[in-house]
Picture 1 (tube, rainbow, N blue to C red):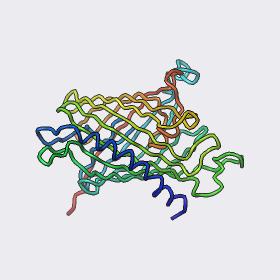
Picture 2 (cartoon, one colour; picture 1 turned 90 degrees about the horizontal axis):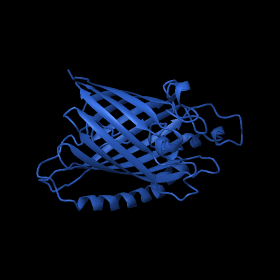
Picture 3 (cartoon, rainbow, N blue to C red; picture 1 turned 60 degrees about the vertical axis):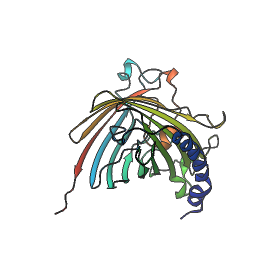
Picture 4 (spheres, rainbow, N blue to C red; picture 1 turned 135 degrees about the vertical axis):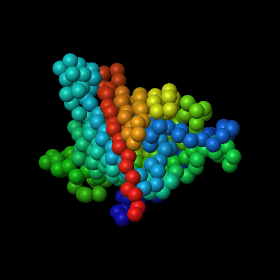
Length: 304
């Protein structure tokens, strides 16, 4: 294991733990529900962020996710059919429920490109540590997601560019997200989403590590249809927040037998914590927001 990766797994993660346990302590102070919680969210994602939900054991899920271009502004409007002519990011993924409380996945992302990398390979593992349960006096659910990204894009011919990747370890980046959720009623759920991202190699004006705090709400309109809102604030000084901007998203989703279909509106271009937090410089005031969708299909391999 490289020295850079070891440093990220030790000293950098300590800050994530410090902030996250503070938020967990605040969440636990809320009184418990009168019954055991289930289906806090309709799927394993909120909009950009993970939810506390897991795939059932031995269930596989294939995901197709697409995000269009800017709806308005310089790169939007009627000339691009309000962004439908362009693709900000595309993600294909296989995800699997290993056990009731462990889920993992692999994916390929087109990547936002431009001033950032494209052609991203992604792997993640999600652990559910707590489930909201009034009988056991557990007022919240808690999951932790660990992501790793690797870009295999061709290095830039410009030796001064950070996309030149003089060392292979510079192609790696990571994200750690804690998902703290609370089901308030059968129709209303909330989430706190402290997130730490780390990129091994960045440009001179950028920073390797960024801590963000997110929050989300889910309103279940019917048993199979829900509305979501999600926002993240990058907890960095003004220099570090150039060019990062805060990620905001709205979404609606509905479940059918074995499928989940979602439509979203967000200022984030890419998928994965590193892209929608550390590499998000899109401003809603400039029309830099876009529609997106995802389709999932669940299937189960039976043992004979």
